[in-house]
Length: 513
Image (cartoon, rainbow, N blue to C red; front, side, top):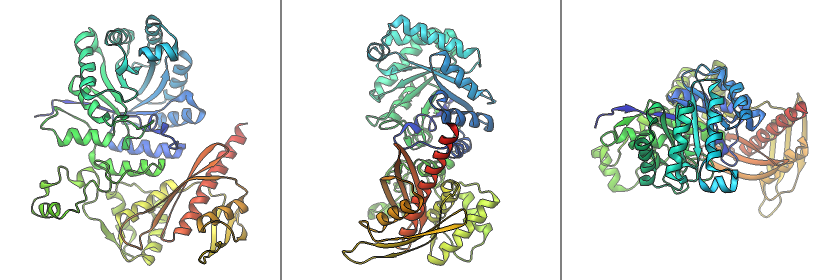
């Protein structure tokens, strides 16, 4: 089947994706993701909800001012204050879009909004009209559309298109729909709304029952022209439709689907890694398309088939989604040019300063480890690009003494402003606990560890360990991350990374007040 049309990919990783518990991002991290989305070739980037917080406003404004190549979108409730704030953030964009939403289902009307159907339509129309004063590109979402009565949904959609909406998004807000229902919902709008040809129909499906991708594709099969999704499928509760799954389902089954996207599929794995590293939300090993096991074959019969003909057990090529065709790459005699080339193949763009810093760490790793894999290099680069933050405190040295059934003894030396401070303690349930206690004692920063994850960056017993942790400080969650072949060193650096983030946040809060 030939691809007769191109559908838009509307990425909401920076808005809906950030609403995943613990996935909040700072401005630098959002800018990194926005760059990755531009390189992916998505059509619309929903950069945030400007009125939600000063940080959200700033990130939307910076993305709008600095990125070209995609429409930049900001979310707003259907009221003038929200819409004014959204435009203030978006006005520097070459291609801005205001996304207005208002709930329409009976359960939302009765219990949340306490508004009649006529009041809903009046409010929705007023929001679109007000947004239209700022720009022509207006999207309207009837929240919980999949559970809205079909007749009323048709009325709302017709009214907002008459008011000037150029995209009408149909959300399955709670992930309740099935593919058949979602398809029928879109077909009903196509068949019954007289002015539907004046707007693009979009679908925004949540994954509470694991059907977000299937529901999204069913919507497009019945007339939708845009899919709203996120990298790795992150989002509230069980998440959203997964961008990489949507893109590769359409492309792999071009014999079945008569549409395609503009996404550069070779950037999917780098984008997935970036989002996972920034948010701390690990991608499950068996995740479709971008999981570590997505192209792994262990069963003997599978391996035999693969050796004879790849397509016996692979419907996609790993290179087509951004996995390197070879894994073992560099050694301690490799130079900067080879490292830069491999970084480029892995989907990273390094400045000269970043390359030099990564190269220095690469040389240290090469002295400790015989074989260096792509995963090791990616971890070093991600730490350089994303793990760095203004270092108020840095590690100078540490010494740990461990004995069976005895409290660990740690001597820790940290530096602040060129001055070193050392502490020695003999308490804690293990070396990591002792490291937390020592860091707290020197820095004076109180925090509680909520999550602590260790993973190997590649193969072998000598592979570097990547430590990611979440700490709580004054009711806020702060992440820390570090990589080292020494797990205790990585743990201390990750704790310091979180500590420095806390200090930066406290400084910003104090300046604001």
